[in-house]
Amino acid sequence: PAGLAIYALLTVLVWLGYTTRWWLVARTVGGGAAPARLLGARLAGDAVGALVPSAKLAGEPLRIAMVRASGTPGSAAAAGVTVDRLLEVIGNMLAVIVYVGIFAWGRGAAQAPWALAAGMLMLLVLLSATLRDLARGRRPLVWLHGPRARRVAPRRQHWFDALARVEGHVMQVFQAHPRQVLAGLALSLVTELLIVLQYRALLAAFGVGLDLPALVLVLLGGGLANIVPTPAGLGALE
Image (cartoon, rainbow, N blue to C red; front, side):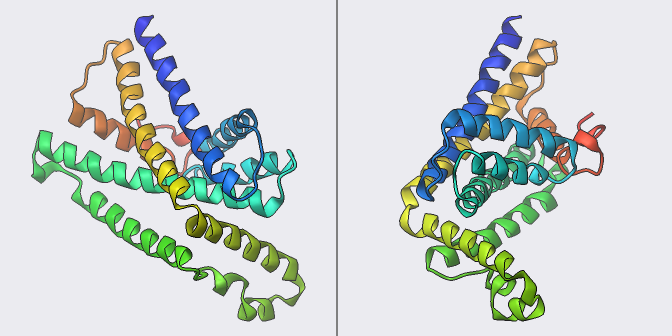
């Protein structure tokens, strides 16, 4: 019972970390939804994302809709969710690289999944370059809503306008609110650490004792469970 209580406490802290990060970035784009509303939207979105194999992205439209229903403009709601997800993805990528390093340290470099770490590092570099462009006022998505795209689908001008507004809000966050971005990234890293402790507490509650290298391998399996083509990733972690 004590182990499960610790697991429950850590779970609450993880969700508070998710909600606080989203609230920080949502405020910068005019998203005035209350933290309780954001928590409910996050829980609902993750529930959908867990059932649909999409790396949790399937739940993002629901998160946007729930925040928009509270009075936040649609473009601001979408931008808040986008920045929140970007910060979470960066935290995930950094965590994977660290996990692989821990596994190599504990089990030997020959057994470590270095290809996975290299792939994460390459994606992180590409994502960082995109975010740097946004901070400098460049629009990396202009090819999706610029003049050429508008000529291809002239009857969808309102879609292009909406995408341009969302990109403008995201750009505003990285240009005008770097402190909130850094605070959100720090929260992502703290949340990753809490997730490690959460898994450890859950396994210990059932008498499963794993050393740190084995535990991070379980966490990598849990991440795989979010993207495999089965509902809720059934079978991946097992």
